[in-house]
Image (cartoon, rainbow, N blue to C red; front, side, top):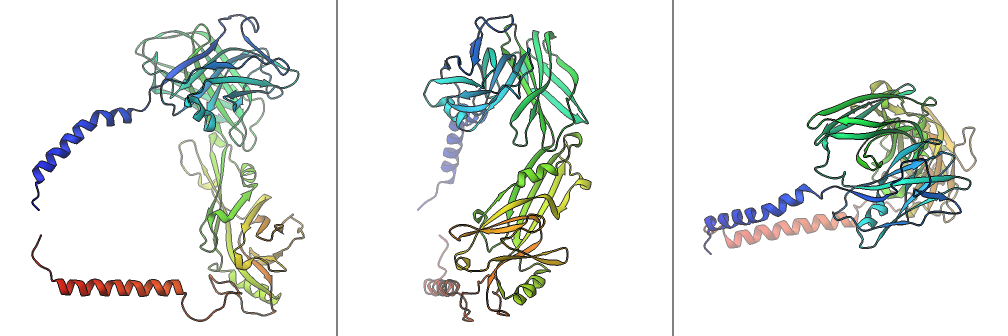
Length: 485
């Protein structure tokens, strides 16, 4: 068959040119927009046409149509009066999905910026009418003046340039210092509001701790507006606490036209890494690690703290022999050996590793729970125990808690073992066996027969591979190299 490389090249280039406009449009992504869901038009104190919400008399859900653009991100910006958080809880629901609580100060107007994520975000463009409702706890009242949905970062080509505008925040002791830089496109006079929110270790807004409003700020067209503000916190930050600063520019009716946000504080992350070939990643679950990590958090200059529990193969550890000797002496056989380590990593606001505060953690202030799904051959045994080598000493964990509250617990169906531990090093799950019996070989449990022969699946794989190579060489020799085609 003849080839026509020139024609193929021309066809390829033509197809690429035809596809370019569509590709460019996709790369640009969906445009942003601000959807005015509700605006009362009021300018005085709460009441009148404002939405009034109590536990016994909530306002009817506010309805609005789907956004015109595809939604990749969204925020609900709500301007409300007299939110006494954290005692008062005004929970906001979008299409029945909770998106957070309002935050504000007693007898003040404040703006809450709520991130729309997960199922709430998916529900925005499902072809059904959208609704916003607020649930208020007993004895409290809240007035809502405006509700705006900010889609995909907000209106494109508006009064301000989002791509070149920023807000930053740093935590210095008991103060938060903010710096704002806003590029104005068309200029004008607007209201400006700062709102500083306290976040818990999960990132949820708890309460508003500081705010500032300026009713009339001039932005000149084609210039960069800069300002700095310092906010004092009501008390020293606690481990695991972070703060969110929202900067909102509003028109004369308090409808937001531009928002910027920054998070600062001891953000905490916790994770589990499984590197052992003897146990699958989904066979291990951990509880309490996030709380333990919060106690290790650094509060300096908004540092971010991450804590990782790593599970490795224990039979390769240097102190595994000490565990083996002790277990054999007690008449126990080793079923599964693991090395558990905890590492703390602290990075500053620029992402740089803080060496003095990072490194391995041998012991936590509070125990965590590590549940391990036992391999089938290890289930149904008796006398389970965990032998652990920690700082040169081998100890034993049983179902009876030690002086530090560490213990083990077998699940009701006998398929999983939960370790409540605060010290991390090499350990082995053992069971009652013959005193002095031979422990399991690496990768094999005691009740698996050792025939001295390789595993059959591996043997079959080697045999089939050899046969395939031989057949291919025989075919080449019979066919010959032949002319180039």
